[in-house]
Image (cartoon, rainbow, N blue to C red; front, top):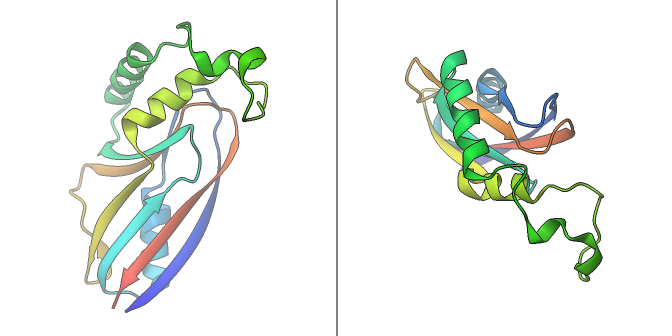
Length: 146
């Protein structure tokens, strides 16, 4: 078994940003030389997520609307009460809503690799989702197999 790791730097531009990283993941698989196995895409951030879905502009608008409804920016989040938070220092962002969105989405996806290619349908894309943009972030892509 071999393991190949790539760190993909990203820069989000908006508060919620769907960053299509499918081609970068494909390139990491090709570079790895692994023909059979899987690839894990992981975001080491608590206000980001990873998801596989269809990259269609109107559908992305629908996803954003659902995420805003699920964890509205203007709701009240205890995380944002900086004056009573003792254990963890704040970076000054009121981003409780971003953490809640990330909780709903999750921080990783695993995709099978067969004959050196990702097993995705023609309409599936891999997205890194930013919920607290604009920021510079890293995505870890790890390919494992033979």
